[in-house]
Each structure stands twice: as structure tokens, then as C-alpha cells.
Amino acid sequence: MSELAAGIDRYLEELARANESPHTLDAYRSDLRQFHEYLSPPGMEPPALAAIDTLLIREWLVKLYNDNLTAVTVRRKLAALRGLFGFLLREGVVAVNVARLVRTPKAPKTIPEVPSPAEMNALIEAVPEVQPGRPFPLRDRAIFELLYGCGLRVSELVGLNLDDLDRGERWVRVRGKGRKERQVPVAGKAAEALERYLAARPVVRDERGVFLNHRGKRLSDRGVRGLVKLYAALTGSDPALHPHSFRHAYATHLLADGADLRAIQELLGHARLSTTQKYTQVSLTDLMRVYDSAHPKAR
Image (cartoon, rainbow, N blue to C red):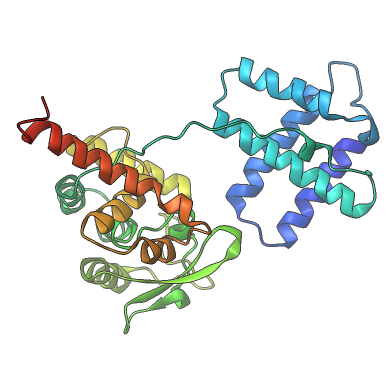
């Protein structure tokens, strides 16, 4: 095993011990192995860790751009590399974190597409009826209600345990990015859908997950993405809908109805207010659309 491959394995093991999310672990594992492969042409070993410099890393980033990867993806891969060399620096294997000397690519500022309240409600209300033969309609309805009613990330939703639910006070304990915990209120319709599902949820020994798949195991984030795609297709909704669309809608609709931006930041679990502020851009875009269509001086 090369020195680089051994370092990658030790770094991933440390992330696992630190309870990093499975999604982050999978992404970093893929990114770092891709970097290892780039430095290992057929029949050759990658250079020693001390020989990896900023020029090699920049060359790899150029290849990623040539492969038509987005700036957001390239930024994540560079973050994985910075984490690796930071770990190796703490181990005393390298003298400097060379990945931190490479400039972070700028990501374009994009405004997320957000379904309207009517569109969200129509999709959620259609969940029990669109396919009567579905095996878990109560579970599917509760998933949709919680995604929109609580603004959860898909990883947070599938990570919920039964003891995270305060059914009396209608709160849920959520473990977000970096294992940071927060409490989120459960809206009335979401609470009702959750109670109906829990009453029918199979009792599976030693399985703490709230949402289960057909094998009685914790539902995966891929499973939730598949459900969203399925119901979007069955109801004729936007085929580009994904679980994060519900989170965008949650934040945007709260803001449009006058909720405080700081409160929305807390509800979403954003570390920085700037991340939450993108939803103000969505609202401003909607306002400009109304102005352009209605004001006599707009045209």
C-alpha cells in the first residue's frame, strides 16, 4: 500500500471515530481515492506525501474542470484534500498543509428553484391517493410532511430515532452537519401524519430509526430521494423535485410570511447567517416578478 493510500485510510478512520455523517464519509472517500488514482498512472506508485505540492494539486483541479465538474463539486474535493493534509500535519507526517495553499474556486451564486405553497400542498395532499397499492402510504405521507413542515435535510430525516421525538410537546431533536443538535418544532399537520404512521409502524427489535424500509431497517437517504421522484412523477409535479426542495420551500415560505431571518437560521441549523440569506434573494426575485407583471411603470 502506498504512503498516500495509508494516510487516506487513517484519515477516514478518524472521521468515522468522530461520528462524521455517512454521507460525508462516502463523499470524502470517493474524492480522496480519485486523487490517489490521478497520482497513480498505470504501473506507477503515487509520489511520497512530502513530494505532493501545490502544483500537483492545481493540476488535479484543472483535470476536474476539464471533466466538466461544477465549481461546487471541485470545492468539496479540495475540502476533502485539505482535511486529509490537516490530519497528516497533526500526525507529523507532513510539514505543511499544502492543500490550504491552493485557492478555493469561486462557486456561482445560484437562487434555488422553490415550489409555491400551493404546489407543495398539492403534492403532499396527493401522497395517500396517487397509488393505493403503495405498501407504506402513512410512512410516505409523514416523510413529506416532516420535510416540508420542519425543513429537515434528508440525512437529518433518515437519522431520526424514536427517542428524538417529543410527541407531547411536538418537538424533534435533529442532528445536523457536524453532529450539531438542534430542536425543531413539528407543525400540526406533520405531527398528525407522524402519529398516524407511528401507530402503524412495525415494532422491530433493536431498530431505533423512525422511518423503516420494507425490510424493517432504517430507511436510507437514497430511499427518500426515490420516493420524492416517484410521487413527483405520479402527480405530474416538477420532475426536478428532490428532498432539499422541501427545505428550500420551508425557509422561503416562512420568510415570505414574515418570519425573522435569525429564527429561520436557527430552525435550519445554518452555522452562518449568509447561508440563510440566499432565501431573501428568492423572495426578492418573486417581488420583482410581481412588480414587472403588475406595475404600470414596469414596462
